[in-house]
Image 1 (cartoon, rainbow, N blue to C red):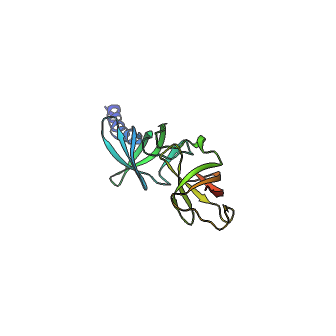
Image 2: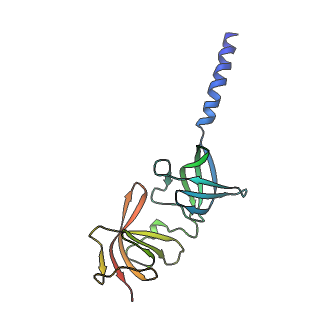
Image 3: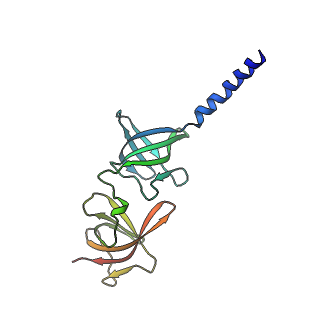
Length: 178
C-alpha cells in the first residue's frame, strides 16, 4: 500500500512537470512581418502572432532572418498570455528572402531609404529589402560629398559582419550609377 501511495504521488507531480518541459512546435508560412513579431499561417489555416526578441529568440541558420513567404518551424512558449518564439528554424526560403549565399560584394541595388546610419536597398530580382550600414568614417562615397537618395541605383561594396542579431552588411564603398 505504501508503494502504491508513493507511485501515485510521483505520477501526480512528475507527469505535469514533464508536460511543461516539452516545447510547443508549429510549422507554417510567415504571412506578415513586423517589428518584434511575425504572423505564422499554419497548414490548417490558423494564423498566430509570435513575438521575437534578442534574449528570447534564436534562429537556424544563424545568419538568416525571416521574411514574408518563408516556411519555418517555430518552437514557442507562452509569456504573459502571448506566444514567444524561442527558436525559428528555416524549412524553405520564400520568394521575398535573400539567400545569404547570394550576397556577393560588389552588387547593384536600388535605394529605398537613406539615413544617417545606412541605407535600405532593394536587391535586383527579389522584392526583399536589405539594410546596409555605414562603416564609421570608413565608407567611401563616389562622387565625394554625395549622399544616396531614395530611388537611386547604386553599386555597393560591403563586408558581412556577424553579431548578436545576425549578419550586418557594412558598406565600405557606395558609388552612384548614372
